Length: 173
Image 1 (cartoon, rainbow, N blue to C red):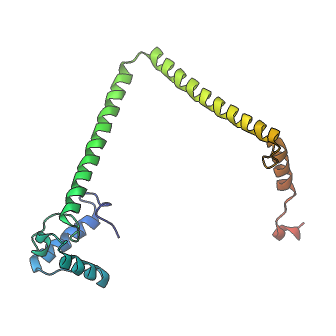
Image 2 (image 1 turned 90 degrees about the vertical axis):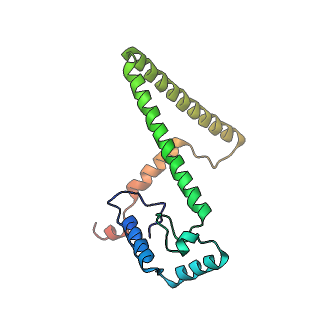
């Protein structure tokens, strides 16, 4: 079942359109419909606790928000949606500005930046490999036998793979 967070406000979204249609008919007939008894009990408990918005109780709610959501939840959700949309717009503008700046750069500058990135990646990989080798050496010196050597393990795996014959094929040979 789709939640209102998972819905998008476009014409092709049948879940949102269905929710709007049900809300419209509920408001027209002044009768609330529930999917199941649990939803009805939950709604009634919230009404008794005073957590349901007055416009929902009066059948005048025109928003797409959940009827069982409190006013604070509705406001918080709207604020978070606007904030997410603003952040997405800012990222798009920043990306476009970066692309424009890249277009203005000299090809030699681009090559130099790519070379710097590659060098940084190579240095990072080399430092990780060096750290792993030092750790293996330290473990070996400490007498830990649970760290297998790379070459013998590969030979054993290769030999095990070659010798293995599935039981179904044992009689076929």
